Image (cartoon, rainbow, N blue to C red):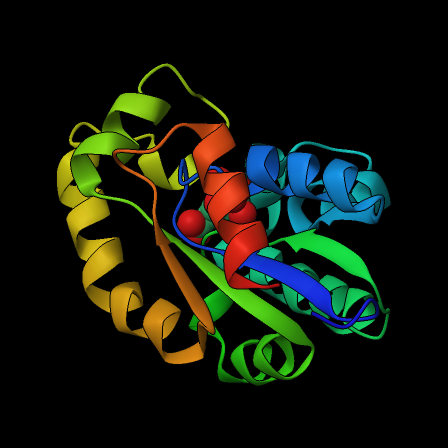
Length: 170
Ligand code: S3P
C-alpha cells in the first residue's frame, strides 16, 4: 500500500469501524477520523439530537459534507457511519479516495454489540432485528459494490481484524 493511500472503513452499525479504525491508525501512525465524530464536533450536539431536530435527511446532508471534506485528505484512516453508502455520490467519493474496507457483520452480531446502545436512532425501535434486516437488505449490496477488501468480523477478535486488514492492504 502506498503511504498516501487512505484507509476507509465501511459497514453497518456495530461492525467495529471506529474501534478498528483507531487501532489501524495507531499501528500505521496515521491520523484517524470518524464521520460521526466530525458531525458532532461541527454541530456541538450528539447524533440522536440531530435526527430529532433535522430528521435523517438533515443528518445525511451533514454526513455527505463531512465525507466530501475528509476525502480530500491523504494518508488518513476514516471510519464512516453505517448509512454513508446510501448516497451514490458518497459511494463514488469513498471508492475513489482510498482503499475501502468493508467490515461484514451478521445481524446477530450487530444486535449483540448494540443491545445496550442508545446512541443509534435507527435502532431505537421495538424490534431492532426487523429494523436491521431492512437496513441490510438495502445496504448489503452497496457495501460490497464499493469495497476493495471485505473482512468478515463475526468470528474474529479486534486484533485479528486489524491484522488481516494490514495483511490485505500491504
Ligand atoms: C447510522 C449509523 C451510525 C450513525 C447514525 C446512522 C446508520 O454510525 O451514523 O446513527 O444509518 O447506519 P455507526 O455505523 O458508527 O453506528
